[in-house]
Length: 192
Image (cartoon, rainbow, N blue to C red; front, side, top):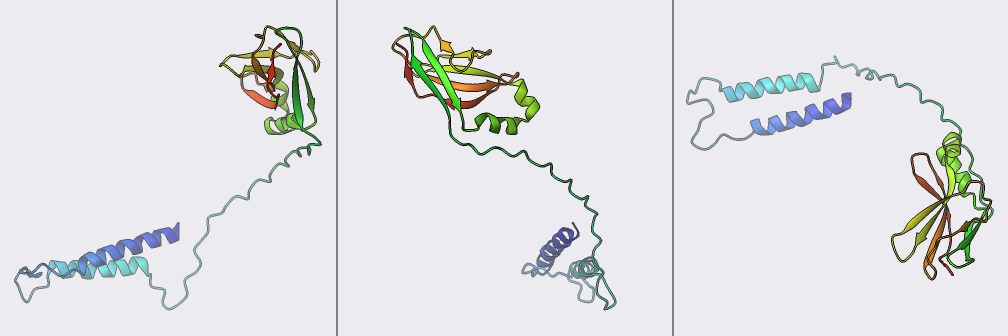
């Protein structure tokens, strides 16, 4: 802060000095026409220079200036050790295949560590509050359906789909606030 204040004062002094150093306009005498009198302009300039010199360059008697006192900064709190996210050994995949007319059978293989990364991102407590679900997206329209996964295993059957339409299936986790976190997405599948 002291250096910034010093720089600001120096810039102000330069600006004032430049204004005072300007020559008076032609036809006008700075002393008001009184040759023996010191002008207000010259008095102001002299006073400003003295005041500025006192503020910018304090008299030290030829001795070096002591270092400026430093504000005590509190030591930074030690960072909590970050949870190590496991290195994936594969990829998270969702596959969907047509079953009976208007149905799709879904299964997934989670070897990519998507849920572990989400757990590390949210923290254990928030992750446990999320629930797994499937979201079914119709690729030809804005239609979307959420299917809750309540212990159905890894091969749920999605029914009520329109035959001949293409769908994407997303395996996600949903928070109590309604936020969805994508784990894996299937390739497009056509409902039979």
